Image 1: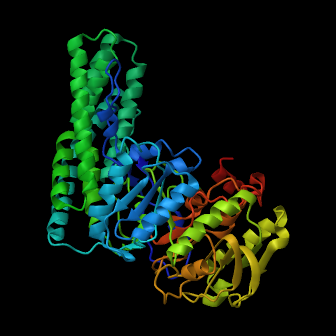
Image 2: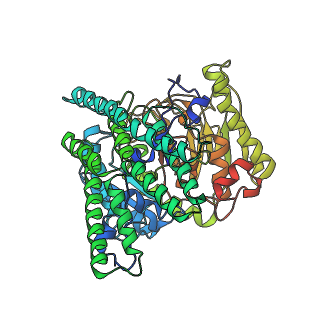
Amino acid sequence: MPGQCARASPEMPPGSRTKATRSRAGTCPHAVCFSFWAPAITIRRVKSTPRASHLVVVALSLLASAARALDAGQLLLIVNKNVPEGLEIARHYAKARAVPDGRILALDLPPGDDCSFDLYETRVLPEVRKALADPKLAGTVSCAVTFYGMPLRVLARPAAPGDAAERAGLEADLAKFVVDIEPVVASVEALARRSDPAFAPIAGSTVDHLAARAEAAARALSKRLAAVQDEQARETLAGLVAKAVDPLVGKANLAERRMAALGNDPKAAPAEIAEAEKIRTELLALRARIDDLQSRRGDPAARRELRDLARAELAPFDYGRMLIGMTNYFNATDGQAAFDNELALVGWNYYPRAKWLGNPLNHKFHGSFPTVLMTMRIDGPTPAACRALIDASVQVEKTGLTGKIVLDAGGNLQIDPSNRVYKAYDDTIRRCAELIRAKSPLAADVVLDEKKEVLPRGAVKDVALYCGWYAVRNYNAPCAFVPGAVGYHIGSFELVSLRNPGEPGWCRGLMLDGIAATLGPEAEPFLAAFPEADEFFPLLLTGKLTLAEVYWKTTPLASWRITMVGDPLYTPYKARPGLKVEDLPAALRGAVGH
């Protein structure tokens, strides 16, 4: 199934929000982003082994936990082995939240805010995927938590020697693939037309078009086979269908089909059961090899071996989509991303790295998509600030967060009063205030400011929630926060650094002033990257979702530049909800499962 996870194409002015980023235009084939092929490994009367479970693709291990409410048993804590303070903070957090033993993964990275593309591909990706595939963790982890000392951003991929030649070769292979596969698809369509004169082939000659054409013809043939009453005629047609369609199936899938037939046959002889077991073992070995090569996508030799393996063993369209994915891999224009936001796609393979992708976990996203790993960060200006964040979140959650709700609109007036997309974000802040005032027991706590200027220093005390804009990288301490407070400022560079003593960004400033959770960009993200105020804060106020779930259900983009800092399990309004789920707008109730 194709999964909609396209990069938004138009260049956005700083701070702008347009429909383009929310359209999910285009497709990202499941096979390219996720895994080329996942063989069934359980067959009747053939016992699965521990080795079999160990080889299940990483992305599949993530799926098992996707439906559960987030809890400590679903966390993987990631630290930098070269920053000992981060490990101590992770241990403190594990104890505070009762995270199971064996959940701390130490990566060998240089200290600092930046991680090169090469280091991410060679030291981060393989190690995290290996950890997620470990039998002790497989099927349990749905959120990765990075700690103090981990990089804030992954730099764009620089051009490497050999890139131009490899890309030219990929494009030539892709062109040849299309030329070779189109007659095969046309033969299936011709058989479908002979079997059913009403069948009308669809048009198109791209890889996706050809795959859709083949699927449509195969569906028509399947429907026709089911309608044939005469057994001999049905057998004849079935033979013709197999001859036409099997070249589109691939050796591995044909082997899996044979394995399933033998394993599900109650009359299978011992030799046939042994054959099924042999096929299963070979398929698992192939799956393991594919996974290993995909986790080393930064290695040209691994890419070359994977292409050869895919061409020989997998379905042709899996191979074609792989060529597309590898070609896109070389396009990293404006590809710098927040480390955590990139890490969310650790289970994906050759996805585009230029600009951004729509976030499949966003409550507005529809369609089939590869699994996304939620990410959060426990970080701060100092180790003490990190421990304070943890302790405040755990303590406040017991009794419930109380305090003022400060919503500082007017950012569109500061940037450009005539720009409708700037006003659109201001409207989300106003709608948030209106909803709370109309439906929440906290209505009296709302402070809404709509003037052009941001609130002055020290304007409001005892603040629990904050959202405002637009004073770029110019924190002015407008609020005094209560322990456990949550808030963010919309600005272009508010998370350039947390530890640099001279950093004037809002994320560092808010945390120094005691806020327990915030978010911001490590570089220009454009306004469309920020969660909308009338989605993020109402969901948080219900007390039904953890901070990580609220963030990932409302942040619009992945593989981009926004990072959320805070305890992923923090649920500040669990003990004292500020909104009922039924009082949310209808479109937002679905994010809570209603």
